[in-house]
Image (cartoon, rainbow, N blue to C red):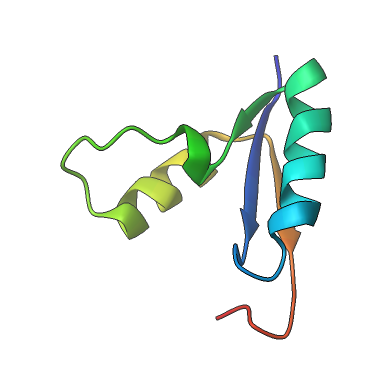
Length: 66
């Protein structure tokens, strides 16, 4: 199964993110912060590690993306 890494701002793209995640989870193994389990790793490092394991990355960009 393909792994998808989804990155976006949360506050302003919350609705768009939820719709996309709902569609992705029907067919693919998505990786998003909603599915991360705290394990002592720095959140930034955890994101980079999960991104490296993914075959596809989707970035939802808005003016607030930092």
